[in-house]
Length: 115
Image 1: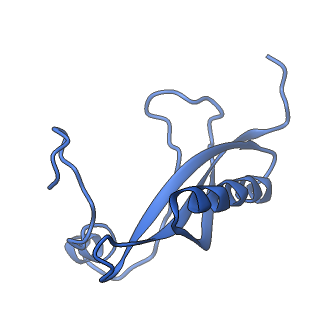
Image 2: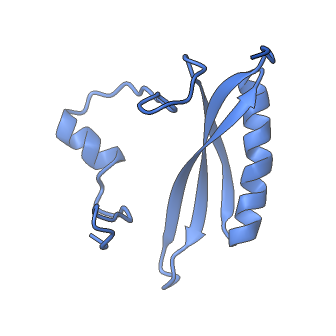
Image 3: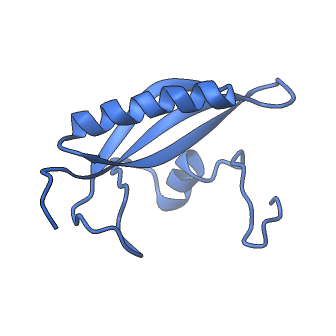
């Protein structure tokens, strides 16, 4: 296979949706995969797609994007596609409750029933 000079990058973009009852907003974190030559190129490609996505489904792209360079350029089961490290003085429970398990997430169990 010929080397193109491009690697895989994932880019996380954040979107804001209006809740169906119009009482608040739902924020979506969406990770997409791009073949690019740099973080900047991957973000540029992802932001073009993010604006199109937002237009198509009637939400707002917040303008926040974060990129991750896939360290192994082979996409297969178990490969790492995004990583973000954050320094915090919170204990594990408080950290998870603050950033990942606030109680306001839209989740489904593995049987596809709403939780």
